[in-house]
Length: 300
Image 1 (cartoon, rainbow, N blue to C red):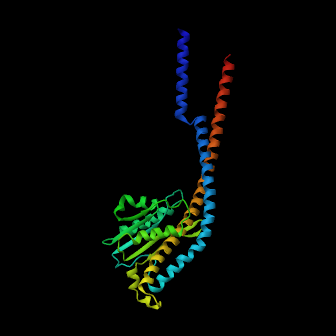
Image 2: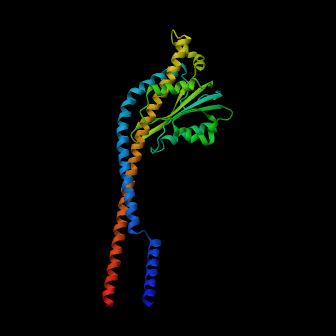
Image 3: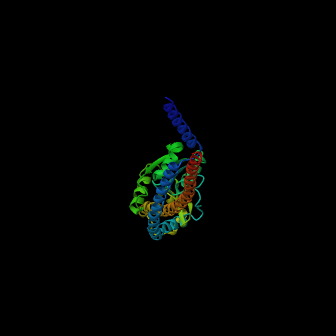
């Protein structure tokens, strides 16, 4: 009976010691599990950085050719409306449309949130204006759906998996024209690529056919009948959307590459700290065991 009681007391004492250790600091097993998890995350972020770097190189090459579409279409609108400001539509326009260029994928910094933030600012300051939103990409739709769901006119997804093409821009332009909303002015909000580490949230003005016909400077162009003007207005809308999609895609890949590089560095720093903590904890365990052995030998 005495031996059984002593064994019971010894087991209880060991349980209390382990519980106290669990409350005080992480054990070797906890640190090793955390260390393994962070190492796996670092492998993923490094792989994503390499993939983003390859996609960025291709997107940057494609952007050089796509800029001709945007420059050409923008030059036409600048010529017929020299006083047009790139920053915002005219105040007297009651019906406006916003085309937001984002994608479906995240982990790329503030690329998508900056576009959604600018759209929210415009919608909050709308007043009595009727503003509709064309959300290209799930990120823009998700950012506006909670508060401004009634303003979303058209939305599209499956954007960002493959490089944008002119066919994609044509589908988006056709959706805007066939929506039935007779807008007076419009704005394309996108991210203009500047360098590997920087981009700028920019705007492009768009005008419907009736607004183009009302411009007095249109007479500077010869032999422009209604059919030619209608065809070009539809084509120029697709041009501008294609240009904006290419700029945003390049900005997204460069931002994702930068974000994954920063995540890999942060994971490396965390691995160093966890390795140091693991070594210290292991040394403490070894030292405690040596003290117990020496104390037991001294008692004998």
